[in-house]
Length: 99
Image 1 (cartoon, rainbow, N blue to C red):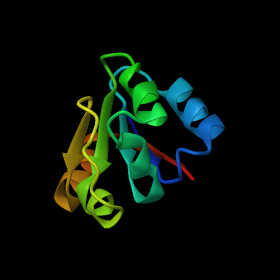
Image 2: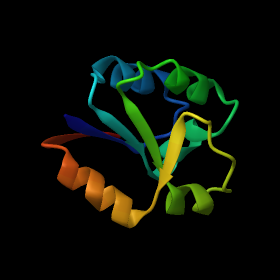
Image 3: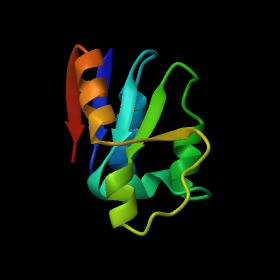
Image 4: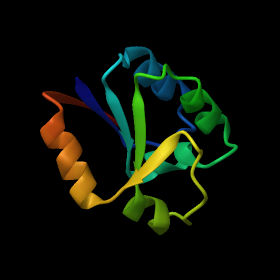
């Protein structure tokens, strides 16, 4: 199980595609920083994330989302706070940063 930390703008579609291709069942993708823009309901990036296999969990850091306008999240994406971020880090045996 790997925690993938995606912190760059989803406008860099190639990096988002590379990240999505690396995800496996049991992995979690956490959107933070500029990466939370990918969680916006109806966005092209959110549609890409909605197509991920069911065994992949997708979350967005709610503090970063709020700081960037607090747009509604796609239904597939769960909001987590900093305590949730720490819990995810403890639950996964390794992490990969995408920036």
